[in-house]
Image 1: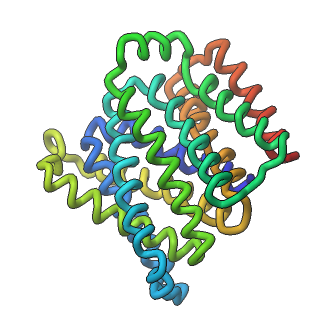
Image 2: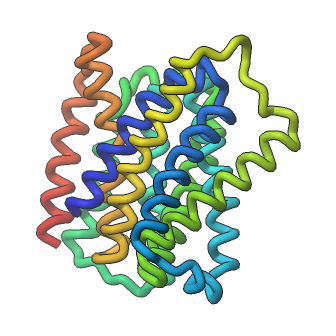
Image 3: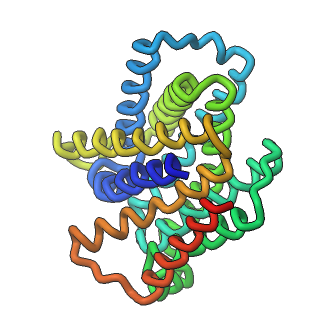
Length: 283
């Protein structure tokens, strides 16, 4: 569970930064630069550690699938953040944990205890409540918020991609599994982005925006590394649920840096998250 919480920290920081950078660079360039950063770091770790990529042979098809699904998930997610409102996009993103949980139970045969399942459900619901003003969410859904459909699609694809990454980490080790995932996603993002003619950034590009995208990549790297390690060493179902609390990081940063004030449902959500994580840990 600790690895899942560390993953949430990284992804929360990446979400907060990504929402800002995507408005300057565009969603495709933001995700491509951030993924190039993570792929570069993972390549260094792969080479320095003397890991052999030959072990990917039997699972190459899954590597390709993970690259395609993961690339689509990231592109849709940053597009959703770019369009907003974040109050709608962020809580929906936490739903990916339910997809990963179901896949872990059905395909890996994991059998979480009753308290763990209850904790998972309570945690996800708590995250959704804590990460947004419920009134704004309802208004945004009613008015068909621009980023809503992108957020729903990315949540589902993140659940699938996260599960495949977890499975690869168990099969070939987290370094090789994560390296192959990052490289596959970069190739897919570059091909799709430029093929569709969406590779150009909107307006003049500043070095600070590029640096911001790379910083987003480093934050995301913290998330995926700890997630992959946790999946390799423990139950995927537990790690994926614990990691879904990442929207709370963005909420906390908004309060600390932007002066936003939490509303009543957010306090309730935080209490539910704490209770859910306790149940998950006990289970």
